[in-house]
Image (cartoon, rainbow, N blue to C red; front, side, top):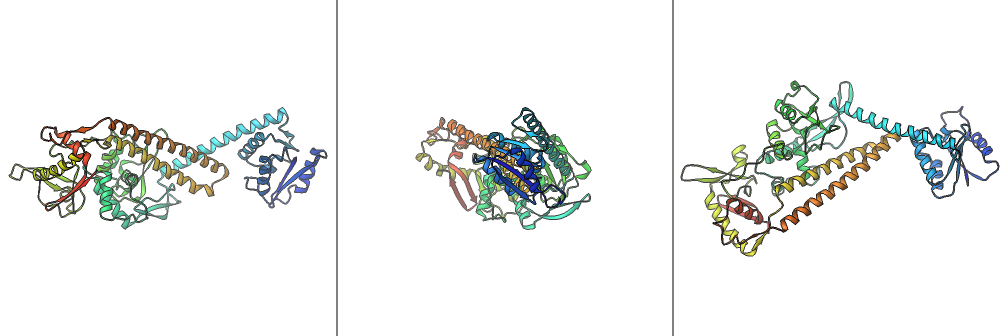
Length: 499
């Protein structure tokens, strides 16, 4: 069946009427039967028109084989929309005729015109993408709000920057106290993300936005310069990392936070800061630069920070925690009769814990060894847990996945108000993000499978009978296999076993 499509905007009273359009199109049919599709009062700048949607539906259903319009702009005013429409027509072998422009896809000239339209449509797509990217970069360099989820620790307020209406973050006092605690916990060299989560759980610290505290969320917070009170130390840190800094050193006054944006040629922000873009933000920071730098250097990717100091004073290092606050117990050596003893690292650094009292290292090791022997009898062969290298790589993948999810959420928020062309760009980018996420999830699964396979080929045997003969490093491996952590004070010891 043939179809005639006609459209008229109500705001153009002098335009040709729908009835006249249909009359012109009937001449091309020369008496053949046809179905009319009329959109009165709709603009041609987009495809959100009921009769046009009905036409496409009938084409896909195989009911229409030729479409005739009075003029090309009656069916579309957008080259991009027209190109998409012609792809549908071609797929379902539907011919297209424009009466006044003699545009007929059944002829060689008509098909040539179609190809020209497709070329211009591609040019329009690329131009829009470049314009969006340039506008984003320009606004980001001015410290303007670029959309997205409001970070934990802040709420949003309207403001004006450089004569431009925008928004900025304002510190939320209650959430900010939790942010400070997270940084304070992780700043301890012996504290892992797992330790931080355990502390939060033990002290029933609830996320004030009803989210779940997890490794990825905490890692995202720790690595974000939006929280730091950026001073010259922060400037020098990012300069040493070859980050592109938009502001002069004189702008780093120790008051404001920073925005970090991905550069065009840069790698992932959690892996390498080279080529990223750093901008002083208009909001106040929450965390002091010294605490923030301790955390950021600690969690930088491999090769970007110094490795942790190897434990030499006790095979319980990294396992034993203060039962009062959850922080690591650090071993101290003296030349007195006391010898080696444990002290709460939080008490030592901040005095915000009453401490664990006097815990002699030798006595504690003997106590734990006694309990270990009971466990070793039950497990003649032990398999070490996943190592720190694998954990680090997994954490990097999880963080990248979170960043992609955030980017997709930001794009979806902009979609309802986007133009047709920008909407297509957003949909294309979301599709690409989804593909990247799937690849990262596969990469994470392969990493875990490979590590488990390697560990399955290894085993620790007969350590119960030869404890005094094995090396210091082997003692630490055995402890790591069996013990999750030890919570201790001078009068209480709780061992949390892995098995």
